[in-house]
Image (cartoon, rainbow, N blue to C red; front, side, top):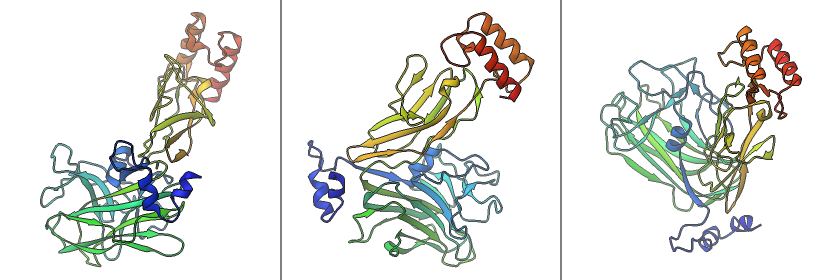
Length: 375
């Protein structure tokens, strides 16, 4: 009830009332999230990888409808990967890799001058096509500030354009009007228009930062980042990705990235899990590690993240264990039978494939059933 009351009416006054006791003036649930941080948290995408549809930050193209961009091929003189469209691997709006004034972390070689800040390469494309970064929260949060930093690092076209809107069922609200970005000029810092924020973001509403070249047929090379200041429950940038199926006894990890979160609790099939020395670690942290994964660890893993304003549970990722590949060589053959019997006869805990605490005939039956099934 407290959070919903804070999000009604005089939001600024309500937020101020929750300032930290240390006198910082910052609300207890205030935090920032940026497109650059989200890109880095997820990591450079692999070829063919799709974005998580339920992540807080996603990247889109205006001519793709509801589809999300996927990782694409790129010319060999690029040094970092990007989101784009597989059917048009280069001459399309894409986002990524990372731009930086620090040469050691700069992933983009296509620049007519060095970047002046850390951001993302944005390629608005041709004609009226836009390249967009979008933010959507799964629960009601309040957006109190939006800042865009942008510069044009190319000279194929004289300028580009950037702006931001709040997209909602009742109609768009312009947060930052279309602003010209002149090629090779000094970087711009753009803030939301007075009176447009703070504003509550409801589930399904999105803040869209868009870039275009204003119809010019030439290319644009933007360095861009957008930062949001939020108040409310955490947002989830990276939901726990599903580990590839692995063999019994292998180490498995799940990771979640949630700006604004101060607490974490991992769950298996909806039930909270806790650390077990030598087997499960990080059950109350962003990274869960399972050592010696067994049949008992199979299932759907999610993480409940929270702060003083509420909690959010991520979507789930499945962990499966291939019992048939007992020797973990990637194949299922006679070598696995030999390895299993050696462990079973020696009383190795790995031979307890049914995870019942004992090593007996039931383990033999289950191993061969999975071995014959191919996993």
